[in-house]
Every structure is written in C-alpha cells, then in structure tokens.
Image 1 (cartoon, rainbow, N blue to C red):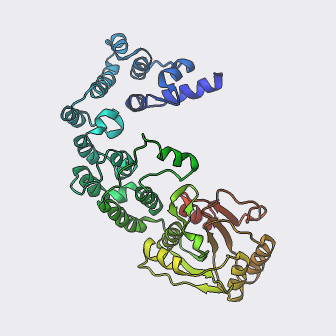
Image 2: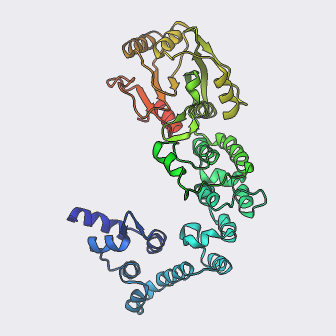
Image 3: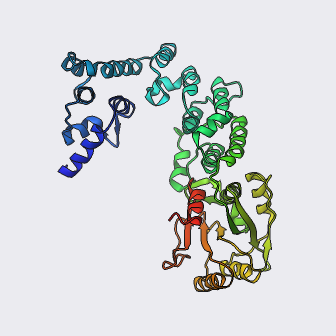
Length: 410
C-alpha cells in the first residue's frame, strides 16, 4: 500500500466521531474479504485521541485488550461501554433480551446480528426506530423471512403504519421515482433479471424464492407514491413530450428490469407536471402523423400508463416532432422524446430542425430517453450542442436530472 492510500484511509478513520466510528466498525466488520482491522494495520492509523484510539485498539486487538489499555482514560470509557453493549447484543440469542437491549441502548436494525433478525418480535420492535427510507430498504430482508406475507402479521402492520405516515414521508424527502422503484421490486418479489445464469439458479433444488408480500403492502406503497408527487421540486417550464407508443413500451427498463418502460415514462411525465411544468403530450401514430394525447391532473401512473399502452403508435421520429412543433409555433423550453429501445434516428435532420425551431420560434433544449437501452451508438445528441442530452436506462434521479437540465444547472 502506497503512502497516498495510507494517508487517505487514515484520514477517513480519524475524521470520524468516536461514536460514529464505533457504530461503523461494529455494524460492518468486513467487505470483499477486507476487514477494518486489515485496513487499520496496513494504513498504520494512529491518533492521540483516547476515544478514537480505544476504538482502533478494540478492532485490531479485541475489546478486552482495549479495556485493559485504556482503563485509566476517562475519555475512552463511554466508547468502551458502548462497544461492550454491542458485544452483548451480538452474543444474545433470546429475542426478549434483545428487545430490552434495543430499548436501553437505542440500537437500530443495522446494529443487530443476523440471527436476531429471524425473530418477528425484534423486527416489530425495531421498525418504529427506523425512518421511512430505512423501512423501505429492509423490505426484502423482512419478506425473505416471511414477515410480510400474512395480513395479520404484526411486522406488516408496523410497516404499513410507517409508510402511511405523511409527516414521516415529508421528512424522508423521498421522491416518486424512489417509491416506484420499490414497488417494481416488491411486485417482482425482488427477482433477478431472467438471464440464463439466473434461470439455471432457480432450477436448483436449493433455490428458495422470496414469498410474495401481502397485496396491502403494494396498495400502501402506491398511495405513498401518489402522496410523494406533492414533494417534487417546483421547476416551472414548458415541455413538449413525445412518447413511443409501440407495443414494446411494456419492456423492462435498463437498470431495473422489473419496471415497465411505460410506467417509468408515466411517472416522469406526472412528476414534471407536479413540479410545475406545462406539458404537451404527443405521440407519432401509425399513419406517421403527430397526435396530441390527453393529460389530466388526476392521472396516476396506472391510469396514464394504461392509456399509453392502448395507443397504436409508429416508430418515433424526433425530427418530425420538431417540424410539427415549429410549424404549429408551439413554444417550449424543453422537448423530450421517450422510447423503450433506441431506434435509428436521422440525426442530421433532427439537428437541422432544432436549429430552424430555435431561429424561428424560441430557444429550446432536447432530451432523448431510451429507457430499455444500456447505451446509444451513435448518440442522438450533437456533442457540440450543450442543449442536447441523451438518457439511457432508468434511474431514481432521472426526473431531477431533467429538471436540472431544463434550468441550466449543468
């Protein structure tokens, strides 16, 4: 290990608050065959702070050695007492005792050993200490143990109570895309993409599929999604959106295979609208004519997605869209083309139409979204035009990227 890497690692450990460091080294002991002890020894981490030194000593030499060396250092005693409590709960096997320790020392789920997570009582007690974002991140762990399958499950009841709390949702700052991603994963029972390797794995006698969560969980998440739309940042602008409405719109997104491209498109449209955008929604019909589609403030991801699926569309032509907008003098700050998979685009024609629109109507930016594609080759965006952007696949930050692009944030 070079001196630069040693300084980098040492700086990270020494910049931590003693309690935060103690929590981190006890919560995650190792990753990818590297432990905290390995890194501390290789980087030769040293400090004169007794509290931090006690944590480092406990990681490398053990808690007993740290207690012996720092027994005369009052600054180190609270940290050592905390690490003793962590050791106690790691060795605990009775859920009732673990619950008492959780209450006494305010442990969260991240601090609990795996064997305690097999007890519903522990989850039931620990969920109330988790923020909504933490509850959503642990749904798979709870479902894997069968705690979300039955309607009468007290764990499911606690989860539903958490995701129905409007104040907790507001404090979490969760965006609609975050929740839609969770819904897609829950609906697919967190299955991996249907690749050849995974299909072979599912045929193994040792393969255990995660039980399907109760439908009330998906219903609760969908209501949570609707509520979260009011938390979208306000970015007023005028947007023309063209959606590729061919049957392939139901394909999965790159980055989240269980999320249909049509649902990702619907959410992006609704989120932009809730953020204050004046949206003109269009598609290219099978007759190669532009058609304007209805868009209502009462639409949900399901209702809008269902309407888009029923539209019979043709192969999207971004240049034709710009020509239609220019000839109709439709003023827009941003034009977005949404498709599932990248189709061949006449880039030169598109670039020409963009310049004509800018010179005759108003300045405009252009985004080309291919939600089921990993990459675009060749790119649709002109590399010399800073007002064109290509987006491939689906990400939870997609809407925020679009809003930032519209407002010249990058």
